[in-house]
Image (cartoon, rainbow, N blue to C red):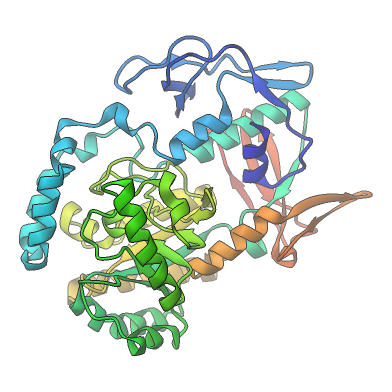
Length: 462
C-alpha cells in the first residue's frame, strides 16, 4: 500500500508505513472513506454495498494510528486500481446500457454511421445517453476521487507521524500549477482536409496539438499528409485501426488488430494511441506497442462505454502511461449537451486546476469546420493562452507529458545535510513542494527558496 502513495507524491520511501486495520470483507462494493469520498473494493467494518444507491458502509472513523503506523480500513492500492481500471462499472450498469452495448445494435450503427448526418446521429445519441445527468458516480463534470483520496491519506499519515511539513516532488515541471494538452481526432476525409486550417487556428495562439489518425477504411493517409502535420511542430498518433467500434469485441480480435495497429505506429512514428469512441479494456494494453494511451475518460457519462478512471492525473496501466480525457469532447458539448460556449470547459478547467491535474481535450476537425463551432474553439484557445500567461499553466504535447511523467517516476528526493535536492532525469525542471495541514486538509505549496517563488493552492479533501 505504501508504494502507490509514494509513486503519486514521489517522496521519501520511509515516511509512510501503511497497514490494514482489520480483516477485509469477502465481497467488493462501495463504501464511504470520508465525506465526499467513495471507495470501491473490500473494506473493514462490514460488507460494502453492491450498488451505490444502497446505504453504504461508513469506514471514515475506522482509520487508526498505532505505534506510528497508520492502519486503514481498506487496501489503498486495491481501491485506487479499482477506480483507475473502472472495476466498479458492472455494479451499476443499466438496462439501457445493455441495449446500446449490444453487438448487433453497434454493428448496425457503425455500418450506417458514414451516411448518417450529424442532425440524425445526435438524436440517436441523446436517446442512448438519456438519464446521464442522474448518474451519481463518477461525479460530473469532473471526478476527483483519487486526488481527494490521496490527499486524505497523506493528511492521516502526517497526523499519525506528527509531520508538520511534508516534502514531495511537484507534479509538473518548472512549478506549473497544472498541465493542458489539445488533441484532435480525425474521423473523416473532410476532417483530414480541414487539418491545415485547424493547425492555423492552433498556431495563432502558439498551441501545439496532436492529431490522431485512423489508419484504415475511413480515408487515405499519405506520407505527405503526415509530414505536413509533423513539419509544423504537431504530433501524429494512431487512432484505432478502422474505428468500427469492435476493437475490444474479444481478446482474440483485439490481439489480431493490435498487431496491425503496432505496425502503423512504426509507420507513423507514433508514440501514442487512442481507441475509437473511447472503447477500452486496460487489462489488454500490454499488447499495444506504444508509450502512452489516451482512451480512458475521467467521467464517461457521455461516452458509449460508461465508467471513468476518477482521476485527473496520468497513471501507469501496465507498461503504458495513461493520459486520461478530463474534459467533455467538442461533439458532445455541441450536439448532446447543446452548448455552444466554453462555460462547461471553463468549469472543468477550474476544477482540475484546483487539484493541479491534467486538462486534456478532444476536438475534431470534422466538427470545427463551421463558423459557430470555430468561434467557440477560438474562445477556448484564447482562454488557455491566458491561463498560460497569467497562471503559468503548462501547455504541452502529449508526448512531452509522457516523457515528463516517466522521468518524474524515476526521480528521487534526497536529503543532503540540511538541504533537499531532486535527483533523476529532467531533475533541473523539477521542484520541491510541501504539504502542510490546515485542520484535516492537506495544503500544497512550492518551496519558495528552492523553486523560484511560491505557489500555494489547497488540495483539500472536502
